[in-house]
Length: 367
Image (cartoon, rainbow, N blue to C red; front, side):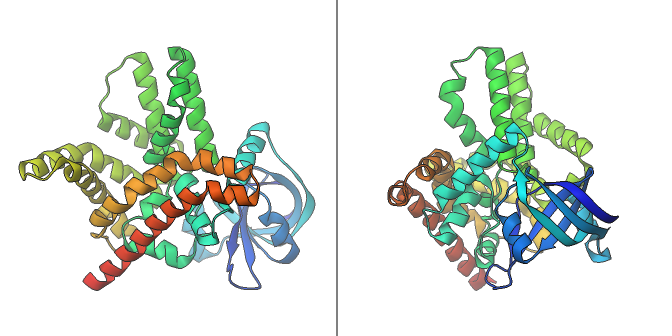
């Protein structure tokens, strides 16, 4: 604690606070001498910081103090030990390591491509593709929570699967050991690109363990991979025990592993067509797996999610699969051409948003 003057590293992408207000502020987390501090910036400092991304460095001076008692537990789970006040940020920044520069270039190019969409659609698109929900309005967040679709804007196993599927034509042509290194590199790159959120950590770790077992020729059950993954991550970072996204992601995966096939068999016995039985069993299994963490975190469960997921997930999956390359392409084009390229993504994102809004209204009518 006390005064500080030196080089600080931006740990997370800055978040705009009260965007609708003229006196908007920016919340940022900096690492100073190996410790993390949160700062709320205003005026010129806020404008300078808002233009930068995680991993970049700047010279700043500030006063370090303890976190308020009401925020101590929450900040501790984020590895934040204090807060910064009287912050003065220099105008000159360093881009950080080569890996940070490469990742942030992709993030900025994605942001440019997404800007070819209307503001709300762009915010939802980035949430679906890379889990960046910083600019989503509160009504959108509420709609997705109430309709049981909030998992779509948290990068998880589905996004990992689509990224590996997109890279598969190249990966499958490699020798086993080279393919292993390349696959692990893709997983590491995507994890950093999505800012290593708890849900993507779980998904990437499971994928990495599965790839290692496949390359070694080991037969390992999915549930064992999940248990090993959760146990290993919690040993590495015990604070994940308090991260809602981590438990929702783990719960959904456990539900899919344990319940999906029995539910499919039960639905087929009831003569439900396979076209409906498989997605319904998948949705139900995931909803059961996330019911407890969702209730503990938000105080409610969304049964309407059994229906909304049937309509939203297929279209959201298409957006996740092709959204990354399409958005990068749009970011390299002029505004007019970029808008034309992103037009299919616009329809897809709006469909998912409409399903969330209709699901929210139906949930309110039921309650």
